[in-house]
Image (cartoon, rainbow, N blue to C red; front, side, top):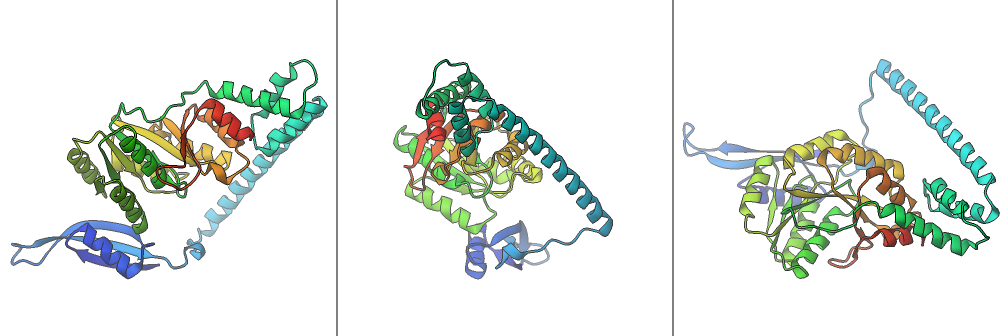
Length: 356
């Protein structure tokens, strides 16, 4: 990685220097205020010092090897966990196979259909359908299974932005389309609900991310504050006191790592005045969604948004995850167009989308 120190009058000027020198994919490693010049400590000018880096080939970066003893421990632990997962998976597969063998033929076809959709909780659905009398076609069973799914999903609240809280926070792992989704929600609030809006971004990890949210803010003619510290966040909130809704974008990080979640929590502070949405890709694996949610629960997410619904045919993980997390879904996103390509979610629509 190429690392370089930049000195500028303000952060905006430093960002421009970094972009010109290292490119838009550069990452901010650290920043601080320093005082330069002056005489005997007087008349020194306040500057911002930023250390940034750029890795032209991040895919092939290597981590330092652990010590031999620790390496053996890691290998042993990994092997044990792998064996436990294999045994658990085998037992589950045998149990499911046994249950499937005892199903009527038409339900066996539905079981295969649900398995293709990667619905983990299909046994409960099949159990309810098994109690129905008379033969049914696969099409009829799919429709009935969709109704059962909708009934189970309806136990959770499906609603959008309540506007009971001033700050709307979108958070989630990298690559799920958080910034675009936030822009869609902001545009809807401004254009349809006539709200006075503003943006705060704490996504200072990548230069390109700031450019993206700045572009959206410019299109919507909404003010934007870029925040690097908790003090910046506090000042930004104070400056937007007259706004009806303030949309907060966050860095796309690997939230399977608890440290990143804690960093975000420390940066934003208490979230009593914030409506928090956890944004996840519909194409994600169910196990990854679970791990992300468990780590992210420290931020008290209230609602879910699923993006990239158009990028996968196997959407069963959405059904399973809603029940696992106990949270309703506010929106489903199916494209990049702002303010379009986002739909308010409902239990019925979710079930139909999964079973499509």
